[in-house]
Length: 103
Image (cartoon, rainbow, N blue to C red; front, side, top):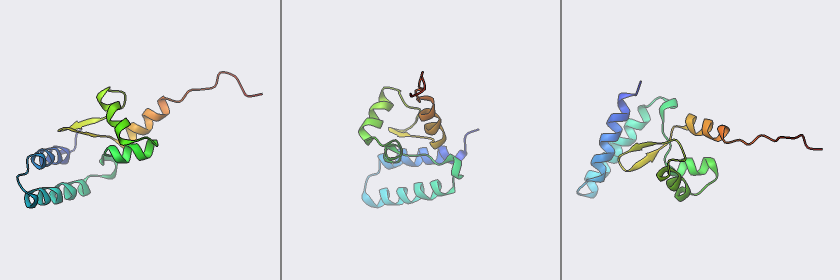
C-alpha cells in the first residue's frame, strides 16, 4: 500500500515547479522536506544524486537509464525517484556468475 505522504510530496513538488517567486518556492521546499522527514525510513526515496553515488555513476547516466527504462524508478512529476531496496535488488540481479572456478 502506498503511503499517503507520497501523494502529498508529489503534489508539493508539482506546485514547486510552477512557483511564481522565490519566497513561494522556499515555503514549498520547506513543506516538501518536512513531509519527507515524516516518511518511514524504508519509504524514503533517493534522487538522481544519491542513486548515482550509491552506484558509482554520474547523475546523467542514471537519468539516461531512466529514460531508457533500464533501472527501476518512480516518476514524480518530471523527476525520477528511486526506492533504495529496489535499487539494491536490481544491482544484485545484474551480477554475473563465474562459469568456472579460478585455477
